Length: 375
Image 1: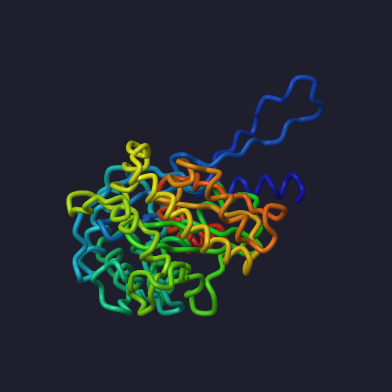
Image 2: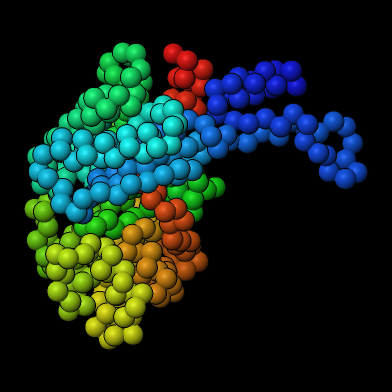
């Protein structure tokens, strides 16, 4: 672009409230010529509503451009069997955040612990929720957003048929999208993300810089890799899947603790690793999960050949507790061994599924700022 064209584009983005432009920045000492304008994301600019539902409740957030979380609101410990109830509650919480902030909302994104079929936007296997199989979560979420008056935009806006810019996706897929753009996966071309939620195990893959969801949005259900053929029955009908052999419930029970209903299983597991790792039972349970997780990761490395692995949820804490053990298991069971070992890192972002849901909602603005914000 010429300097004049770049200035005109920056002025348009500034008028939309997306960026700020410092037209007279100070130049570096000894630098020649007029310094370029300095651009930054506008901290007072518009936001999107991001929502996440998991087995222990939900969280709503307002997220600005570039993955900046502006405000969050957690809610409820019991997720009802009717998805409409919890999605209405999370949207209500988000509407409250918007009212307090006074910000303009330009889209909404939802993360759920289920494969989300495209283009329908249905949750096909919400295994750790009591929701019916095939619940039309994107449509329910869209209606809740519309009823709350958050996005009153004209019919035909992006994100759903005939409605405002509203999106839904699998929580780990969205975590991977966020980590690739803003977190531990930045700069990776082929990124594998594996994470535990409050229950179960999920995985996601970024290939050549793009989130890979398969032909219908159902790719990379890594929780249903068999890691213990004689193990527990899994919800999918198989036995010994990673989903039931290496999730927070498996860890708590392997450590000889009563899971109990009083706190989140994920939080209980993390607390055990952080405060009781010296207990032989806890250490033994951690080693057992590392062995099972390492077996699954090694198989994925052999098939996918990623250049980086990022771990989330309980697996972050397993990696912190004994960083070399997990890396050694993966290397020893991988086809190329230590000579071809893949870096294994922790997730870098808090609430990365929320940030990923927000990225979905921001995408129309990134693709066409004028068209998305001015209609």
